[in-house]
Length: 221
Image (cartoon, rainbow, N blue to C red; front, side, top):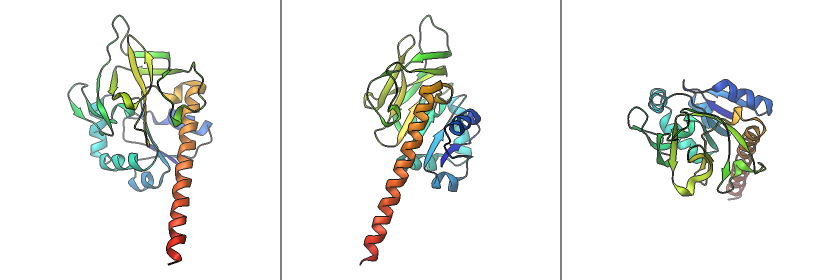
């Protein structure tokens, strides 16, 4: 089961509809016990960085999400990706979840419209589990006015919009972020969500096997 975090700043139902289309079990929730027993977490987001962090703080979700991102597949979408970083400068300097080093800054695209809205091509820097099977020419859908500035080692893909905009990031373990909206990005977006669901299943099975092995070993002594 994939948990979609309901904290008041997410486009929950379009994400839920995409998972339904893929026949992926999900639950929209803010309940800590449900988040803890889920196989993976989706953190959507629409709006401003400070508002999102304030809502997460008010609901007591910040420590839990920080821990969950170290234990199971975790995908932040749009604003949900931005709050994965250390800081955001929208309206005022605000501390993020600090799961990825870097800052979220005003999008600078001279001569182009802000917010950036529309379809753009992903330019891949490296492979990661979420990009498995994606075509070389994968176009995805964006709506944003701010963008993250990640460390080079965390960048998976960027897109061209008045410069190189980081669009897919990964900590090398369980934590991922997509600046675009996979749930609104047609077949490439659905493929990314399917890869995420498959990853959740794989990680859950490995943990179950490991726990079973530990229990069997302990029972012999």
